Length: 255
Image 1 (spheres, rainbow, N blue to C red):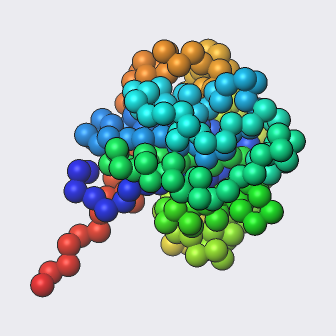
Image 2 (image 1 turned 180 degrees about the vertical axis):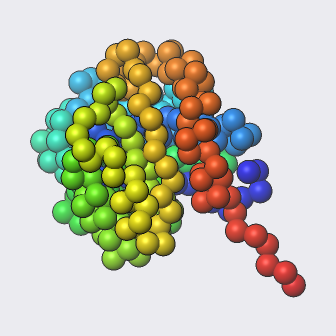
């Protein structure tokens, strides 16, 4: 995967708690296992009391060689949408700051894994959502959705919002966040997603990856690389083949 044109990927979600950070951490480690230099980014993280746990987990997965000011330029205390958290902190989120941070990371890495906040359409400002950030950075989106009742409608709505905004969704991942998911939806969500996404690839189901601390953001950063390495084979087996297809560069044109 060294010969490639893709310099970044935006990991968006259908909501909060759907497994975006776990997926982003595992994607970063998986890409590194393919020989790529990976930089992490979370443009804004809320609920930072005081540390940005998700951003630090992403940073730990990428060997921690990038400045936190670029990895997470907006670190906000209120656990709310970035727009509300920024208003509470009297901070203005502006796209040029996010753009400069991304560019600095991209200069040092082969690919930047950018994780959005909350759902992909969550607002950062009155005119800036996760979708707009992906579009302004020129990044395709991998959409992560949780294994729960209602995920079909939420996922299809998010996919249509991306299509409406002319942002390429290069795949959907169904993430099992509970060790014991319950409900009849579990037998049909994957097949319905695969049949209703149209031209958007269904990349597969990421099984539940146990986290002793309850969330990846609560895990001590020193433990993140080892945890990710232990789960790499599971991740690769579940999603690796599909990811190879959607993230590889297009074949060269014959002259």
